Image (cartoon, rainbow, N blue to C red; front, top):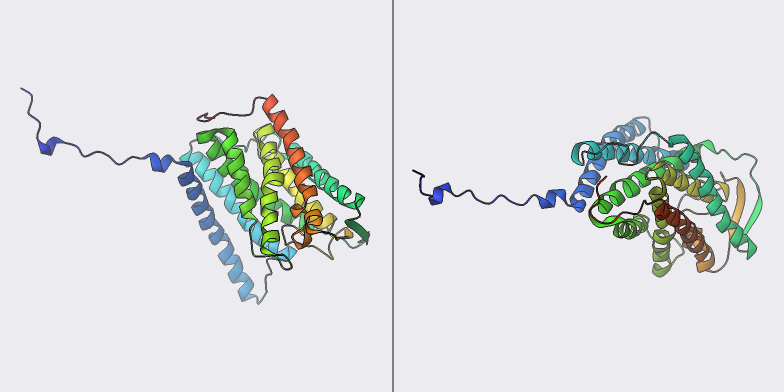
Amino acid sequence: MEKPSTSLDITPPQPSASWRQHPVTEILVFAGIAAAIFCALALPIAALYHLTHTTIDPNSERGGLTVEFCFAVAAVAAYVIVTKRIDKRTLTAAGLAPVGFFSETGIGLIIGGGVFSAVIGAMSTFRLYEIGGINAYFKPLLPLALFLCVAVFQEVAMRGCIFQTLERRWGSGIALVASSLFFGLLHLGSPVEGLSTGEWLVGPFFLAFETGFLFTAAYLLTRRLWLPIGLHWGWNFFETSIYGTANSGAWENDPNTLFAGHAHGPFLLTGGSFGPEASIFCLFVGFYAGTILLRLAIRRGQWRPAHTRD
């Protein structure tokens, strides 16, 4: 005979685990793991600098390379951990397939440099940018390494973790807009000297629609991170180390630039002390290039609706 049910037999309802599977939770977990790894790398380096009485300026090429290298290693390590342990996905599905590692990164470097050169060309046409001379003592290796680390860190975080996590829940459209806007906010650093509050906000806003959109479209085209990493690398290197303009209000490499170039003119045409990324030329060229890549990606069937799994 079946035992009658009592209040003691009632199992209390289990708390919903949906919050653990929410994209925001996963992004926060990635950020927490990356922060822990960054501290584990950066603190011993900072202690070594302190013991050797060496100062590190994060705004210099050498100091910036040290900081960005730690960011890049932390982002990659955290992304691999989240991908394999939490998402249960392969590295290929996460955009880290070995195929295209060299070719797509190299092509991206060339395209990124070419796209930014188009911006400088447009500015030069309207006499908003002038080249004063060529630096015979230009040393490219340090800035090349620096901006590669910047590209790896930001692309793994943006197009790797954030975009893909949002896309698996809400589809490519929402993920594209949200991750691009977040990419712009990432560059909302300290106020730039010589700019009003409104001008200071223009740069990050434009970045969302020029480079954020462009780099995300590059990821969608191949479903690998190598092309956007190369694009980001080439864009920053040419902007700062070839043409000598400011990068998001910082990283102005003069005197270690190939050209002694100077931009002058209205803020919306040159970006002022923020750099050309806050100009309408960058906005138009970057958005146009991103539109081309996005159309190619859609033709390849790379656009995904919501709730699509790898």
